[in-house]
Figure (cartoon, rainbow, N blue to C red):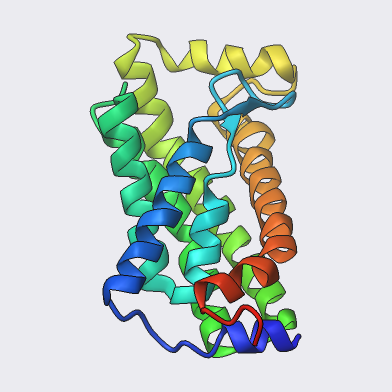
Length: 211
């Protein structure tokens, strides 16, 4: 618990050279992790898991929620510039908003309550926000834009969900049985990794190694 309390002493983001360098490094790591995607068995093939929120969460915990937003923004911008966008940037904007929906509540809660217990509560809160925002963004933005970009009817996307889960037969069941579980799985996985790695990484970010 002491390491979590020590790591949480920084109250806000100071955009000095060290903070900018830390944001840049974490953004680069997040971008690289975003390039490696793993399909999941319960979701259509175009939903793939990546761990790019891990350095964003670590940065948000160590440097504050504003830093988390900046890391998320740089990550998505780098991805668009290097990898390109198949949805004219709309999907990338949604990715940014969904990522922030987890990182910002988690980082804000941890900033106010700097203990391991409250870090866990913050991650749970952020996970809940991510599931809700991710479901809404998919239903009203991502899936319609994806269908339009590839000139597909929505029924075709829903049928792709039916292949992996026969119970999926409408947009609402697609969200409940594919999108929400996908975001839940991602949030839980990234949260667990954050709890495992944060204590080891935060001393480096705060220059407390050996102290």
